[in-house]
Length: 139
Image (cartoon, rainbow, N blue to C red):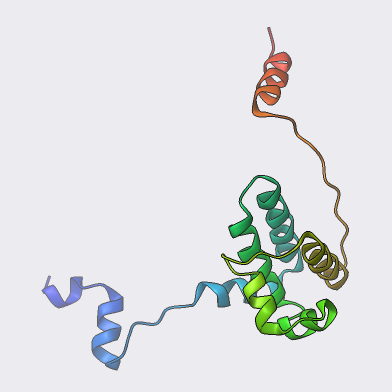
């Protein structure tokens, strides 16, 4: 088999079009899926809240940022928070520092926009979970 036939398709595309191989921006993929599947947006919001509660606020803000961008938009949300879209983007960036009040408003507006409610439950500590699983095991 000639070497040319064993090269990856991406490099063949590069050679034929004289430009970079076709790729899709991950954020664009997320936005498309959020618009196509509202339940995906709901799951992302739930995940964001779980990340925040479990000590990962940086990722939590980034997830919220993607959902805001794909749904209500920074301009509309900024009006509700009485701030600028740029300030809001910074607030929801990895290094942002939104107040709990701002986060509450953001999540509330997203819930209204996506027409869903949330219920938060506690699952206990890892040790408690192991104990409860051990108690449920057949003898």
